[in-house]
Image 1 (tube, one colour):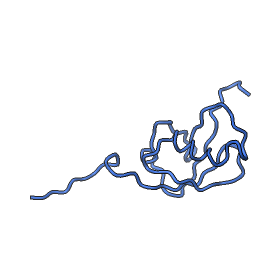
Image 2 (cartoon, rainbow, N blue to C red):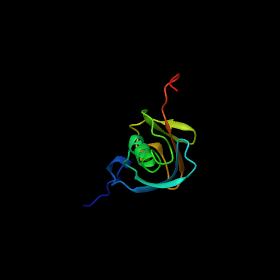
Image 3 (cartoon, one colour):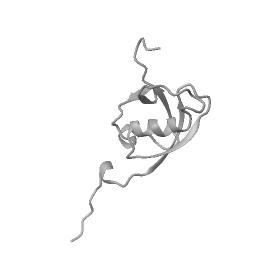
Image 4 (spheres, rainbow, N blue to C red):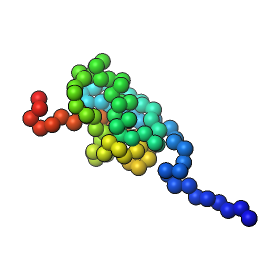
Length: 100
């Protein structure tokens, strides 16, 4: 007797998710390939890679991802955040108050 097993999100192989993204004060929106298993920390690094030190001055602060105006925790995955292909994310520096 064969049965079917329903796989949860965490049991599935990572799927590609291309994202439209803007980094900090950059004027260029970019298309960044990530996967459903990538964390927001990895997404932030992938987005920053294309602009930080090129069009945006590098700063010594952590980077955070915003999706639909919501700040996402660094350990949350793309799948957990519910981010769909070609949706827009914004990555900003997490500048402490009074530091600039």
